[in-house]
Image (cartoon, rainbow, N blue to C red; front, side):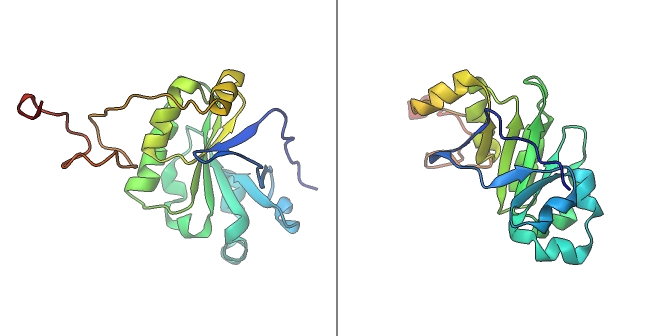
Length: 180
């Protein structure tokens, strides 16, 4: 039998608000025997055969840890509905780069989920690089999201996976003195 992790105090948040999480984290592919939508660790996902990945595409996700290479799944993105990127500690930002690469370079159309130590100060940056789902355990973040507060700065000078409001030019350019 597969070892499924309990939901604990984790809540799923998307820009539309809190939602019930249809996905379960499992350690082995045995969890695919049921009808659940399953997030597998990278090693378990890679052990699946081609046919099994194709048959379970709509209910198959993978969890990448910061030290695991995105290249391991790039050729398999069409067999995934969700890529979960781990944040085991607030100061490990490697998953930001992976999210941006998934959206920008690889045009991944599925969900990109942040899992782990997601904090209020990071949320707006995570949204900008392409995350669209968040497993939230931090109670400060939960409270602020319940209040409708996502934080962030209104102006940006760098490009992002999600475009900023129309500025009549490049979204990452600051207004020049001539425009003020």
